[in-house]
Image (cartoon, rainbow, N blue to C red; front, side, top):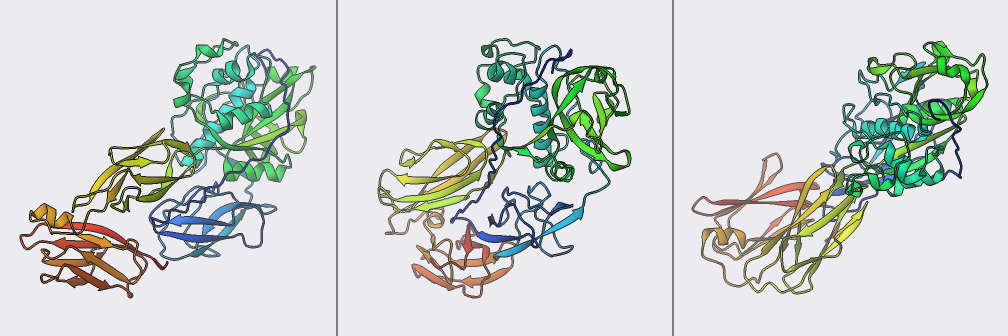
Amino acid sequence: MKTPPTFLKLAGTFILLLGMLQPDDTAAQTYTVTLDKQGESGGTDQVTVVAGKPMPVALSPLKEGYAFNGYFDAVSDGKQYYTPAMASASDWDKTADATLYAQWITLPAAFSWGNHLGQNWLSTPKNQGACGSCWAFSMAASYEARKRIVEIKPALAIDLSEQHMVSCWAGNCNGGGTATHWNKFRDEGVPDEACFPYVASAVPCSSGCSDWTSRVFRAAAWASNSIAVAEIKREIMVNGPVYAIMDVYQDFYSYSMGIYSHLEGDFAGSKAVIIYGWDNADDCWLVVNTWGTNWGETGPGGTKGFFRVSISANNCNFPRSVINVRPVRDYILHYPGELEIGRESGATGEFMLATETDWTVSDDASWLSLSTSGATGNAVVTATATEENTSALPRTATVTVRAKRIDDITITITQQGVSTDIPSTRADLLNSVRVYPNPFTNLINLENVAGIERVVITNINGQVLDIAEPKGSGSLSIPATRYQPGTYLVNISLPTGEKKVLRIIKTDEPQ
């Protein structure tokens, strides 16, 4: 709706698209976690977790009359591993398959994302001006708040370009917010405000920045929400503010404070707003409008731009429809720190990147080929040796993974060398030692250790588990049946004092 208003058209069939990460990186220490919903329904049943990494994104279950409070390692109390938004509350710190249990709380009498855990998670209300773009402002504001919520960063600086949506999606100021537009949010994304600043008119799409595709924020999924009061409350509390449609009458323009109720004036159209909470004591929804900070009553952040409207009276047909959006999280859930492949030409190895965002991958070696240069979301990358390593020493390549708003990630890929003569230099002596298999089950094997003085196996806390001395032998085998699944360090020492440390993983899976 414009200011003054124009009719907002909401069309199309809403599509439920629910995304889920289910990484399966066999090169990392992975476990299966069953999510026990305590007899309730919906959400994700199982996830694959990686030791020392955040929990993967999953979907929350439902319970009539209650709000989901996350998954814990006990039926009551215990340690929390998932937040209500099904974002990570903890890195995985168990060394076996496990079950997590849903815990619930009754819906509170009042709730507000404008003051949750002492923080304001909302964007400051913007002004759509004389353009029927309330749909774009409400889509952006609900996403921005939810992005802060899933990233658990209430101060996250995020400001999407409403002008991009108006100019590139609708092409005019006559309304929007259709299923087509929500799909574009999911499939194409929206760049930042600086890329295409708002001008309150339908200027050409080409007026935006030329590099907008590299600056977008995307929706992982969106869905039409039930308009039942309990369902709206649950959705807001668990996942964040929602996009909503209301009918508008002439007296709404003169609202300044209190619980709005239509008393006079003609129907003026429909508009999109953002519901961010409720207060049962006043029987009202807490709502953000799109008419700037000189309209309405003062709300979170100390600015105007907010209003309240009755829940039970269904005043102004409020809300006529509700849509929720799930932002893409800018993170890479897990990846292998290193990967080893054979010395032969054509030798291969695989690693998985588990994520929701767009990423690219490259390497710095002429002898290595990667099966893809990038993707969106989860993908398995195959690393192939394009030539044989004829050296006695292994050689390494660095693979770099890049994604928007994420620090570069590096993976070391080692190609085995020919096991023949033991090199004579100290550095070569250490580098020629081969530890296999990795991951291991019941036995740790070492080759090329004739020049090594001592091999010490410790856990990651430094506790010594085994000490072995090759005494001139070219190989060693260390029994490891008593080791628990987890990460261990192989400390290799020369008589001259030089050392090298290798990381290995114990697994219960047969190798």
